Length: 380
Image (cartoon, rainbow, N blue to C red; front, side, top):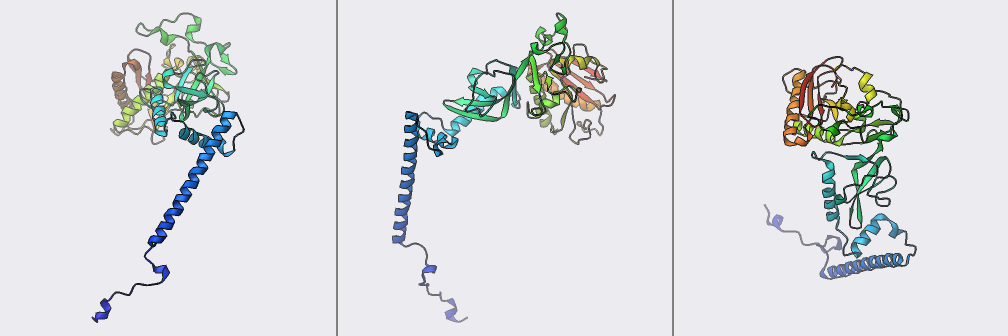
């Protein structure tokens, strides 16, 4: 190989092939950068001063200063006590933890209208407009309320949680609210004698009713369940509908699903076969076989569920024995037993049901306040 083939090409002297900025060029660039930063700082400082002066004198403020983001940033920069974004986020999570139940999966708090929210959580609600501009610690009328957490002077909206204020029980007239037929609870006819082990409060008339409309029926009450899942299966064309639902039931169902997930069961296909039943429907609607006169379904703390991940309308083979039968209901019962041992305050009834009368196997779960177990063939 000729020696000249190993020689390096001479360095180009053309400007476009230069190795980079010269030292003088770097000094010029640094000086220009400092000027730009200084101009930005002066401009921002002027904006902050203008906003503060306008607020102090109640003067009209510039349009840019009126944007929520601009106001929030300005407040944070000029107020030494303003919480950081990380602090606000942490405080919001902490405040909502107790409201999400034992399962951590609740997405709604259900309570009477006019009842204060937990004062230690700094939670506020708003029915119309933004939480940050129309906030109150007390839901003043029935319906769904948006939720926010107050941290100092900062309000953090919570996107996946609602407060549901109930219509009072006294609104029911002659068995109805509006056009929706409910019927009469046993307690309206006098004192109710439930099982000796049952807390008397479990058979009191419901505190009130959730109004369910065409628009809000898909509102989630927990990770897996919506309002519409628990509605009575009648009066399809009557709106609004009214629902009794106790949050401890929803919490218990989510805990059972948590346990099933730990055992390898996919729970996205959970289905509520029967949730709340109005007294009228419990007495004479649908298949009444096996229904109790004091059914927990009338009190909003019972549901019949099954797991249907393949979407065929029937229970899946949960125990892996190649069959779909009451054994799969018992597989869910094992999770119920574990949940009740861990959370005795949620103790209640659990009945396993065989396939019968147009439905597959399922399990009844409730929070009646004492342990009960049975095998059934009709409705839960």
